[in-house]
Amino acid sequence: MPFTQPQTSIFADYEILVNGSSLPGSAQLHITGLTVDEQVNLPTLFTLNFRSLDVQEGEVLWLDNSLFSIGNTVEVKLGYRENLATLIVGEITAIEPEFTIDRLPKVMIRGYDRSHRLHRGRHTQTFVQLKDSEIAAQIAQQVGLSAQVEDSGVVHDYILQANQTHMDFLQERARKINYEVMVEDRNLVFRPTSNQDSEILTLTFSDDLLQFYPCMSSTSQVNEVKVQGWNPKEKQAIIGRAATGDEGSKMGGETSGAALSQNAFGTAVKTLSNHPMITQAEADQLAQARFQQLNLELITGEGICRGRTDLRAGKVVQIDGVGRRFSGQYYVTSVLHRYRNSQYQTKFTVRRNAQ
Image (cartoon, rainbow, N blue to C red):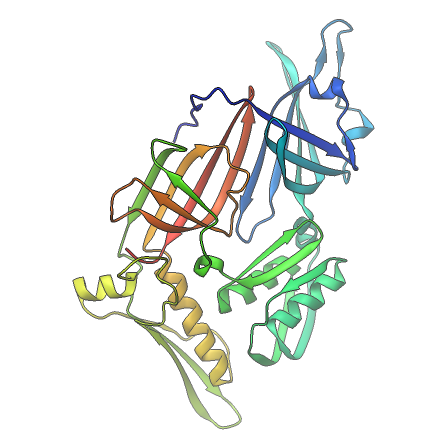
């Protein structure tokens, strides 16, 4: 999909801070573009692109400057004129120069928010009689982050982190209970998938929404999820179920993906039997999580709008002007903020569980 420039007389602006100090004016002059790429359950990425040649002196710039050392803290602010908002506070993890015989040298500075630290190293440890939210809080403490967690409810007898990175392990736990994992500055966030929240902004096609490509598909929709487990103490099977009516919020829609597919094609059941669990509460929680995740795949879409710093991954937006079937609330799964030549656009992907 092309990344077009909006027709607008409003000039975008930015501010870059390195280790808490604004980027020197000489460096600002050589910036050709920047991006901030946010995705639910993945580290947020930033890139800074520079022209890397002093034409008068014939020297390569910025490549060896201590300003851009691995590990330095970078804060990226973006917006319009005096109205700038912080999109990321991250750390430099890569310096990528580009040397070609027919073009001037360039350099790209790349880094991530502090969640990249959760991908460093593999760990083996056990957690006994703890909720997933309590496990997330413990891991946050281990890596020097504050914990911003929401109670996950179910206490697990025994959970093993088996030679996994902290992020892989937390994402595995989050998927089982339909939670999100992310890092905001120095806070590890572990919370329910927020598609049931109220919308934070409205995008209207032909106004601030420039392109939108939605797709409604019943392929992954079922009207029931069944989870099968075994209680070794009681020597009894454990069955967890979630079905039409357990979708939670329909995000302003009338008919959920489960109901839509059942009305069109009849009943369909998805059975999960490869997830170890020993309590009814665990089985019920997994069935509910998987059912809601499948429903949220009913409508997927991607689009481009004029630059919006308030459009963030993990939030809910209202999209209007795209017909009755596709207008409504959407859960934002990824956002790419891009600045270039004083123009700012935001590319995004979304999901919705009902029409």
